[in-house]
Each structure stands twice: as C-alpha cells, then as structure tokens.
Image (cartoon, rainbow, N blue to C red):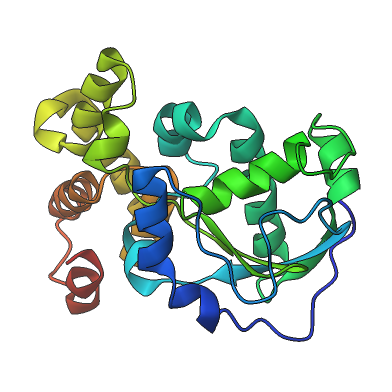
Length: 241
C-alpha cells in the first residue's frame, strides 16, 4: 500500500443510513445505490482514494476480521480473491490509521497484482464495485470510500451459492455442538491466554478476530474460567453476553 496519510474528516453518517438499501441490492443482484454526485458510469476511478471506517455497532460486535479464517474459508468464494485482498489491505490501513487514510489505487493495484489501470473495467475498479455490491464498502463520494472493519456472517442466501461441502463446513464452524474437538481447542487457547494475564475481554476479541463463532467463544472462556477456578467477574459476563 502506498504511504498512509490521515484525512481531516471521517464522517460516515451517509454510509450508515444506507446499510439496508445496499444489503437489499446485493441480495437481489442489483447495483448498490450511490450518493448524489456519484455515477456508476464514471469512466475512471480517481487515483487517490480516501478510505474511512464504516462503523456499525451491531455488525462490528459479531463480525469477522477481513483477515480471519472465516473470511478466507467462506467469503472468498463469493467475493473473489481480488476484492478479498483489497479489503484486507484496507483493513490493515484502518488499523494503522483508524481515522482514515488516503491510498494511491494505482500503486495498490500493482502491489496486489491487479494492474495499475483504474478504468471502468479494470480489476481494481471492479473489486471496489464488488465490495460495494456486497455491502462491505460504500462510496460516500467519488473520492471517499467507507469500508467495514468486520464482515458479517454469511446469510442463508449467500451460503446457498457455496458448494455443498463448504456449506456443511460452515454449519460446523458456527455451531459449537457439532465440533467438540474444536471446542476443546478453543478452551485450551482461552485458558492459556488467561494464565498469561490476558483479560477476558482481550481473549474474546482475539478469538473473534480469528473468526471463531460467538457461542464457541462463550463456552470456551467459561470452561477456561472454571478450570482456573476464577471467581465470578461481572465485567467478564457483561462482555460475553
């Protein structure tokens, strides 16, 4: 990625108010709505794009980091590698500059193997459009893009587009009752982190960033606390519920 430069403002209110419309567009295959002044037919994407975080307290709390195993296993087949890698690069940029950053798309395209063209049918342009189609990004303006910091879990409609073996894997992934061995591993990881002094909230956030299902995180941490014979911790229960 090119050198990150923090912008002066990061208002994403317009993006927040269009979440439902964008999701509906993705589910029906239609083109996501754009704000005033932005046209789908624009022939060339600006070289410099300002990327800001698209915050959503509900989705962010239960979502998956773009670099998580969940995204690689299940979202990749829907988004394709170009869009997935571009969103991962944006996620890294937002980690380094939480208030937003400016990116040179031509340089980023070359770095990701997408080419430097920003024309309408270029791989970089199609990758951004696809991210918007799936509700993972939203163009606030021609020069400004709001990007989700976490991906939601796939909907049933989206899962039905995946191969049957991958759908079965997804069911096992999100249902801890179907994977006792994996549950035991998560418990062991949680116990090890707690023994090293990590807080319950820290363990929960780390496991969530790996794409571990919420129910599996809850059971694993509770079992780890029982193994450590830790007293009840109100803040821990508030974090887990």
